[in-house]
Image (spheres, helix red, strand yellow):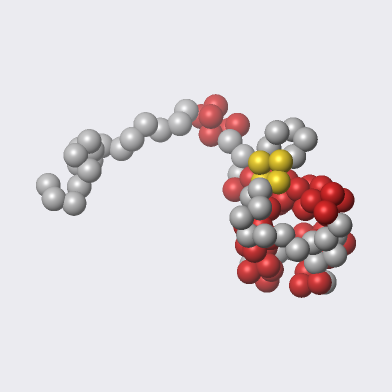
Length: 102
C-alpha cells in the first residue's frame, strides 16, 4: 500500500456534487473573468492612490468590499501570460498605463 493515501479505497470515488451544485457552479472562464476584473479594479484603485503603475510583487490591495487582491502577483501573471489575454483585457490594462499591454 506504499504511495497510496490510507483513507482511500481502490475503486471508490470521493463525493460527487449534486446536479444543482454543478448547475450553479461558475465555469472556469467566468471565474477567470471575475478575477481579472477584480485585478483591474485593484490596479485602478492603486494608481489613483499612488499615482504610478509600478507595484511590488508582494503588494496586496484591499478593495472597498473587503476583497484582498494580490496585485503584484496579478500583474506579474498578466504580463507573463499576455499572449493569452483577449484584446479586451489587453486594452483594459493598456488604458491604465501598462506599456507592455499596448
